[in-house]
Structure formats: C-alpha cells, structure tokens
Image (tube, rainbow over all chains, first blue to last red; front, top):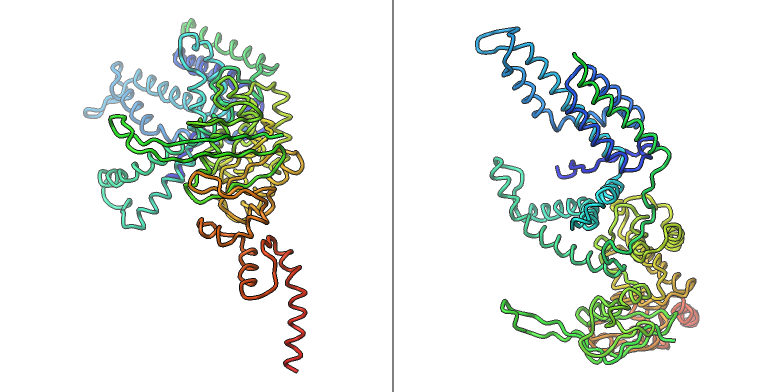
Length: 267
Length: 295
C-alpha cells in the first residue's frame, strides 16, 4: 500500500526536453499554465493542443505514463464538468424534468475539461522529464532574487531535496514498524476508515522518534562534511543556459504571444 | 609527525532537568592522552559506553573538550576560525550509512563535501571520479543510494570523505550495521586508502577481527585508555581483555585455548595462516605418533 506513493516520478529518456535546463522547464510550465487560463477561444485551444502534443512527442515519454497522472483528478474532473454542464444558464438545448442542458453549458464544460486535462498533463510532463534534484536546483537558482527579501531560498531547496531523499527510507521504516506491531497483535486491516486511522496512531510515535534521530545524525554528518549554509558553496554541475535553452525560450515567447493574441480575435 | 594530539582531555555529558539544573554528570572521557602519527592505521576498541564515539566526535570538532586540548595537525579544535580546515583535514564516517548520505544520486553525494568547501566545478568532477574509483563504486555513479546495499552505501560515504582530500579519516563503527560481506568490503577499502594513499585511519570498532592488521590498537574503558600497543601484544592479553568485556579474534581465542590445553603455541596468534604455520608441524609429529600407536 505504501509503496504505491511516487513523488517526483521521473522517466529517464534521451530527449531534448530532458536536456533542457530545469529553469527553462519551470518557466515554460508557468507560461503554459498561464496561457491556458488566458485564452477562451477554439483557436487558442488548438494552439495549446499543438504545443502540448509536440512537447509530448519531443519528451519521448510513453503516452500511458502521461495519462497516469490524470487518474488523480478524475473525481474533480467529473464534478466540475457536471456542475458546468447542468448549472450554466442560457439557451436550453435539452430538457428532461429538472435536468436542463444549455449550449453555453456544453461549451464551458468542454473547455473546463480540456483546461484541467491540459493543466495536469503539462505539469506532469515537467516532473517526468526533470529529476527532483534538478528541480530543486532550478527552483533555488530562479528564486535566488528572493534572498534579498530575507527568504531562505537555499535552505528551503536543501530541505526539499533532503525530504525527497528520506521519503523511501521513512516508508520502509513505517513498513517495518507496522510489521513489528502486527506481529504483536496490532490490526491495521479491518474496520472502517475511523478505526483504521486510529490504528495508525501508535505508528506515529516510533516513526517520529526515529525521524528525529535520523535528522540529528544527518545534521552532524553534514557538519562533518563542512556544510555551513549556502555561502561560499560551489556546485559540481552549475546550471548553465545552453543553445537549446535559448531556442526553447524563443519558442515559448512565440507560443505565449500567439495565445495572448487569440483573445483579440472576434470569435 | 603527529596528526592527532589529545592532551588531558576531559569530556562530560550533562543531564538537565526541566528547570535546566544539572541533574547528573556522566564523565565520558577523563584524562585522555593520545597521539596518532601521520600515515598510521589505528584501531580503537572498547565496550559500549567506553567513550570511543565521543572521542571520534571530538576529533572532528563536532564536540569540544571540557578540559584539555585536541590538536589536529597543530590546529586547536576550539579555534572557531580553524573549524573548516580541521574538518577538511580530519574527515569522518559515521555508523549508519542511511543517515549520512545527503543526496539522491551517488555522484552528487560524493560532491557534497567539496561543494561546501567551495572547490571549482571541474576540480569537483575530478575528485568525484577519483574518490569513486578508490572505493570501487564507479559503476553506481548515477544510481540512487536507496538501491545500494549497506556496504555499498558505506563505501559511498567513505568516497564522500575521500573527495574532500583529508589527511586523516575517523570511522566511527562503520561496519556495525553491515552484513559480513559488506563489512569485508568496507574494511578492505579502508586498508587500501591507508596503504596506497597514505591517509591516516582511525578505525573505531567492536569487531576484534578488524583490528588484526592495524598498526596500533588502543583499548578504551570507561573514558580512559587502558591499553595501547601493537595488535599482537594487545591480543596476547586475553584474560585482561575478557575482564573488559572484550573478546579476541576467533583464531587468537582458538590458539589461546589450545595453548591452555598444553599445545606449545605462542601467545598472540592473529591469523589463520599463522596458526596453520604452528599447527601443521605439530599435527604431523603427533599424527605420525598416533598412527604408530594404532599399528
């Protein structure tokens, strides 16, 4: 049950998208998400579709991996589509008892669904082509300006990458504690949701205890290896924009302007 | 030349109650005097609570002595300005491999130390190459540490210290959580670092076997050095070691028991080969005698 959790699911492949600087991918995803909310026309969605499909093709990630991410939002998708479908006022197209579907309703529901699906596919494309470490590196570098306002950017990025490192370790530990408690008669399987949740409480105490112990150990090991914050720290592979990133930015700007212009179109 | 010099070191752990009053003082080290020569391979043995781990932390300035001084290559660990160069000179490997690996990728973890020291990127890559090949983990360069065995993780941790180019590495029970084959790999790696690269090794352990080919063995008990000699001389004192709740290597124990039963064996036999060397001629002689009796 616990092993199903995957965070930062990275799909290794030799693609152009994988080789892009994480900052470029972050900026690209941001612009793409923004553009989806900006446009409201068929042309806009057509452009977004072309952009998304060509990105997927470029990424060399199998389609089923990308669609997997959609499972998580199915309920949200169904809810928002049905709300839009049934509750939008306007020209009735179809009426049956209290159910009334309008042309406007179909239009907004359709756009809503496309928008949600594109949102999820776009952002999972980023996590599929970027390693968690590259992602935190990219975040640290691109949010570096916030240091001036007293935001501890380096520390936050370091915390994120350490958290990612320790997720599998703590999952394994939880498993171990669960087995140890099951061996002594604890029951994690039967009963309703509330009972199951209650059974989890005795798990938390040993888990927290060991997490704190690990944290203390890790802090000492980091200190022993000369860690003293972000100051004076160099990187083995510093992030550098390449020729590929320049091209990517140009494409992004063209795409974004095109999307912005679709709003000016009359239809 | 001495790389480590501890003079009259005293260290206590204070236990405080809720009002921050000292409830109890546990003396971890008292009047400890140790000097360790550059390039040597020293094993520190001791029972749980003998103060050996505390001593290791003092060497890396992770803890400071309450009294007395510790000099690492002539630098006082109390001198805050020297803190980073002390840690650069005297690296440290801890017991639990999971709790000292920082990154999700082996290569990045090895680079962590040099990155903190502000080494140039090209030089970091060279050092990482070098460190990984020294511990025999090049093939795992881009792997996640979560996929490695305990022994492999510990070798990555050692590579992380080697990449800092230390003169001395202190290993605090690096093999305690490993299986026998992982333990063997780690011990071999440490020995090679000492022989090939001349790195001073301070190996803290409670596996007697691992102390056999050290240059020197220091035995600690309740915060004091009680024995300090070559492994052969230390392991000749079987009864004394047993009183300290420590054993001797299995082969030494066997030889000791045989000697007690009257076989003419010397004290302090450390390896299987050595024991064979003494036993084979004996067996030949007695064996022939036995055959004649049968006839």
